[in-house]
Image (cartoon, rainbow, N blue to C red; front, side):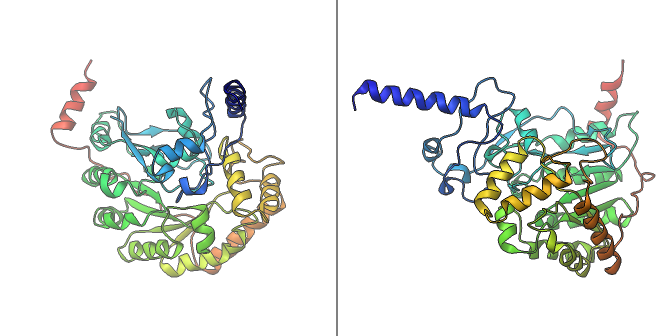
Length: 386
């Protein structure tokens, strides 16, 4: 082969990868040795970029550890509390100490949000993280504002606040200290056993009716769990976390979320029974949903990890969403529709009644809130002056 022939082949390859990167689903599967311990199989193009090049195995090889090594950037937060008006969500405000999540859940509905930061919703979500180290300081100022009216804050609604990077960063612990000082109500959702570190901060809030915790368990099967949630503590470890939180007086809600039809739905009753035995006092579930890039990322993983089940799982997902992999309409996206969705809800209701679990935890108190004191709080008052 002469140089011109080689150049022609290479140019054709580059053009092929350019056009492939504009498609709606990931094209290149990064070899397993470069993505050890990760959920996504590749890095689909960012939908906001006019031009992009699909990741190639050679780039991951040059990166040394490939996707196995996490990269953490810092963002100086200007605001701490994010407000929403969605009728599908029971809370109106939340805090996210991190963007991105090392847990790498293949079904993660938050994957599309990573595109807003300029990254891919695939492997980038799991390996390129953004920490917000000053968020507790900003939160203190926001809680000191004269117009602030307390209501339960949700933590863990997008990415997990107790993912592995939190062990070193301790940003979540800083946030809890501010909430404890101000008697502010908080609901925490996590898959991470690292939350046990902060029992000393959460238990006093719970004693006052100001805190509860939701622990998510999707499967009791270790093999399925490890494949689907590669850097999440084992199901047994999460059951132990429920037990330790409950024994510390912290109300715990077992969250079977999501239930993957054709893959984990047969475990519903066993998960509920195990959570009740561990000390959970309530349980909830949510319909399986795959918004935007989450759909092709999950489908690619499913066909590699469970090829014999792939068609059955995808057919069930479409059945629940009216023939599509996702129905974004309010009132539909979390509940689903059809016979399978109705039967699942009936099974759930029977199982939690049998195990004496509640559908909901008691509402958190807001009447004990007191604005923060100190230098940072006083400065925030001056910020509000005309």
